[in-house]
Image 1 (spheres, rainbow, N blue to C red):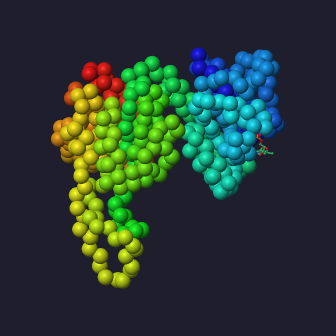
Image 2: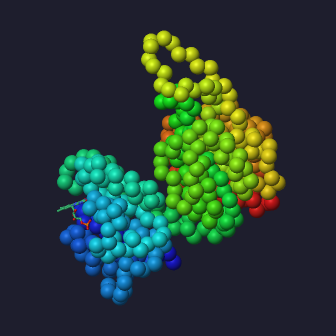
Image 3: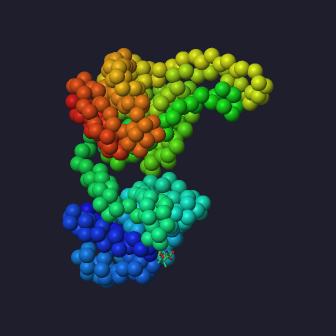
Length: 389
Ligand SMILES: Cc1cc2nc3c(=O)[nH]c(=O)nc-3n(C[C@H](O)[C@H](O)[C@H](O)COP(=O)(O)O)c2cc1C
């Protein structure tokens, strides 16, 4: 049974944490509450211990309890700051410093507190360390104002907890110790020293793949092309801002066991970018773009028999899927992931995706889901291909 440390901090939403404890206990998790003095102004710690069916005070060092997950709901602006700065001045922050597994937080606070630059910096610091944020949501706040700051509903927090713990408990060992190379983001091809030709890829899909591969025990290298989201912890990050950088770094690691090329690599680039900024003079600026090298095709041509190579096809509906099938054959890839970038709710720069997985054995549609869930489906397919080698 997985153990969850549940931090509860001092906001009105502490009452909703009672429901969360019940949901966690009902799902079979062992829950150990860590209740701040601030939270006790709203709900007593006794309530949480009773709901968690834990005797209070039986643990001499509660902050050193090993757990599979540390969740904090609600998370106040105050404790968010304390966590970001590594303070250890109560049992919750002490536990957070001693905890080595995943951490999930559900912030709840007034919109102005949430939007304050200090809070933004603290959120960014925690995200960069891999902390998973659920919410906050938009809506009416306890004090009557409208805005972003409501704690996510306990059911939504619960399903994210499930997702994280299921990923941890996954029995498959097929990727453990394998060298996995993932590219993510979108390359930018300089026009001059300040301007570039780029694309809208945020890197979310590739980052989710790197994170998922890491959670399956792989030794992951992430080729990062201008990511709009932080790279996950525990992976080696190599910055590859241009198509040329990405090509060089990918080919240098072309013997990886699994290669997943999720980055949007420029197909064309300005052949001779100016070393300085072109001054504005009112005259038209004509740039002829030249094709870049096809990195995936080069990797496919040089592939080893045991490698698994995965390509992505960002295309529109209609004949896009047929083009993806053709690309898989032409580039000698095992698997192609087709996603429809003509839709605004999935694909480029969206948190969700919906894909078709194309392999030698046929095609599988994966319904719209978070990019992490899509990454899990892609890597399940990679594991299946590996198991046939
Ligand atoms: C009625 C009331 C409601 C509060 N609600 C929140 C809240 O939702 N979010 C928040 O960040 N702080 C809220 N606060 C402020 C925190 O309780 C305060 O910052 C406290 O020091 C938090 O301590 P803790 O983070 O250790 O639990 C509230 C304060 C009061 C008096």
